[in-house]
Amino acid sequence: MFSKACEYGIKAILYIATQSIDGKRVKISDVANNSGCPEAFTAKILGKLTKSSIVNSYKGPYGGFEIEMRKMKTTKISEIVYAIDGDSLYNGCALGLNECDANDPCPMHEKFYGIRKELKTMLDTTTIYELATKLKSGKSTLIR
Amino acid sequence: MFSKACEYGIKAILYIATQSIDGKRVKISDVANNSGCPEAFTAKILGKLTKSSIVNSYKGPYGGFEIEMRKMKTTKISEIVYAIDGDSLYNGCALGLNECDANDPCPMHEKFYGIRKELKTMLDTTTIYELATKLKSGKSTLIR
DNA sequence: TTTATTTAAGATAAGTTTGTCTGAAATAGA
DNA sequence: TCTATTTCAGACAAACTTATCTTAAATAAA
Image (cartoon, rainbow over all chains, first blue to last red; front, side, top):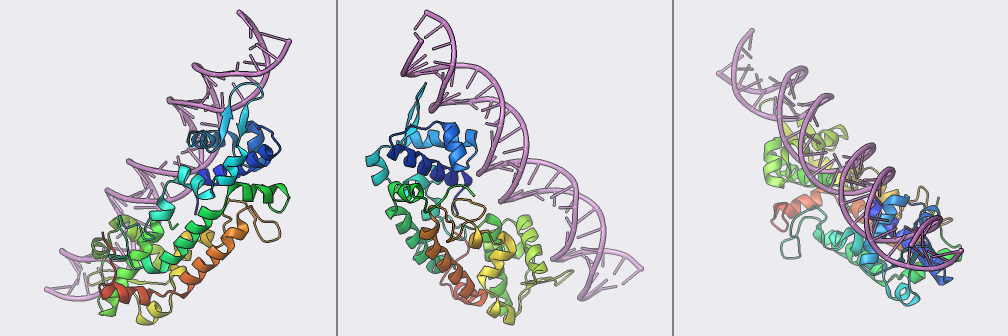
């Protein structure tokens, strides 16, 4: 469904958010250890998310990553997915046609339409904050 | 969502089915030309689908691929997906955890649960015949 | 100013998926 | 039997994704 890069991006952000809620910045090694993502690869992905200004990064001692409270409450998971995987999940045809719409559909278009819409709605209405608080309270996990 | 291999597999089967409805066997070059799939790669995928006995293949002159009427009416799209992509779409965790269930969920588990179930149900209830007849009648297309 | 610490950026490597090519095996028909 | 036609099988190649490594740049604190 998501690429590995996207999975890591979401997990990394959720861990960073749990720490930002406590006012703590975290460095990449902490993110990797606590999200179960490979360190170097995750660093690269966090670079993208920094450029998309979803997280903030600070160099040097006491530096690291953090995400503002306002940001984690307003940023939807769909924005992370879009920043990393682009719009393929939303606009791509199930059978890979260059164009595929109700006027000239692939054989699965109609069948997929509803499911994709729900997926999109779900990602568009779920905030980082919502998932991070669930994670922080121990109701979900990043590592297993 | 699906791998390229899976997209090609579904498109190839649907084209073969439209021809089998007319009692015509088709060879790989015809499948490639009429489904918009690369010939050699599709040949390999059709090999898998032949082994899964979803299609029948015949060597030699007047040979090619065909799918029995009974088979196309009873075979679900989920079986094609399973034969090519395995069960990752059904069982994989959205965030890539090795195990992820209601007891010990990833942060997105609950959000994904319903959508994945609907996707599964859709693929489990859609037959090759249903999509092939729609395609044959011109209501959908494989190439664009 | 120097040092230690941290992210940034880009080169490189490894792995997987996608795609092609070649020769073998089967088979229908002359 | 011979030939043309077709799938089958596996080697090979290209492209993309995933992952690592190395060096540079920034910065806090002594």
